[in-house]
Length: 296
Ligand code: CO
Picture 1: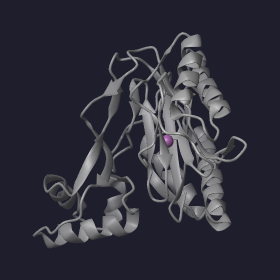
Picture 2: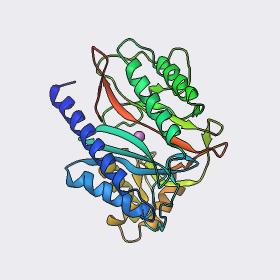
Picture 3: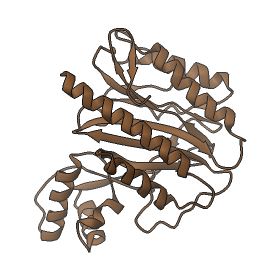
Picture 4: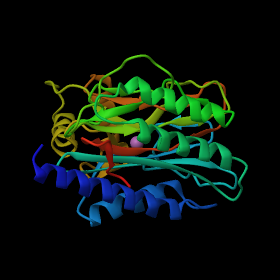
């Protein structure tokens, strides 16, 4: 990787961090979830970044994958346990980070600490020559030490330019083997802790979409929408609420793209034991000594 590319990656990491910290201050009782995501995303754009994915808000038993729709009336309530996950890119170089906030109470402080300390332990372990599986050992040990479960099927991921999930998986539970980390690799490490079953699943629409395939469709307006999605988001995830600047009748055309298999939505990932969930995440670059935390 050239030093120019590394510079872009560092910039994306710092802006993702700043946007996350700004977002944290907005998450308060009675504040609108749509307003919070809009403000965070405006902050990114105003600071010359682009969004690597829609700002995710996962509340209470939701583990991951939800963003407000353009019509959302949802507000935060006292006691909500909110995972905020923000992704920024600069010329395709992505910084992805997350934190957890509990509104107006401290019932889940230890669970918040568990995922954060698991992340710190994982960062200690990560280095060139280390198996990704070793990170899972560190994460599970720490989270179980707090008396919680790691979520087994929410894993960290390798990141490449314009590619949020490059194929390398960073486990959150003890696993043998896995990809061998090498200098120059960029990975997002994201442990989740829960008092539930330790698995997530579900089918409900998260309002987050991605382009699956570009193909010929008969409808002119739907084709125009497909082309705009391709040009604007480069295969990265996008939000329904982002599309309204493209077309007035976008809802209808988005439905057409869904039905024709051009676009699909990500499902909301609920904790399967109805447990509460916390998350912490950093994007790190492996270097010859260990790691550089890009989102620190
Ligand atoms: Co993330």
